[in-house]
Length: 135
Image (cartoon, rainbow, N blue to C red; front, side, top):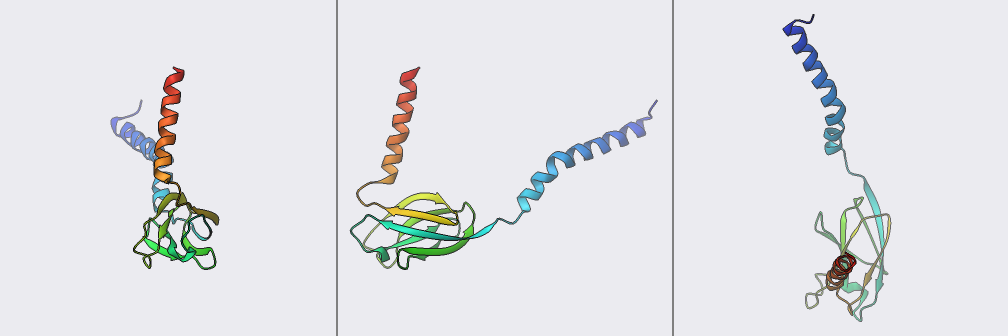
């Protein structure tokens, strides 16, 4: 027969073992350094304005990186949110592309004839209505 003190100690040890098994990996993951990568982005400019009017905006740091010869190179965390943006040198224009997640090699397309946000909204509506029609 186990005494009350023995049962209490056994319960505490069991809680610590189970807690360590399930919680410690999550705790370590929270403090793990994010992987910083070198990102090379090629600009595919379908607009009638110059390539120099565009920059890459890192949404997590708010740093804007210009294109040189249709290529922008930056260092950021893997999967950081990046967006094609208008250069501060061209305040008369506005362009905010869709967010893309950072990877080593990327292509960003500027297309001034379409609105990415409206297309996203329309796609969502089409998917929503098509799934409700099937029911």
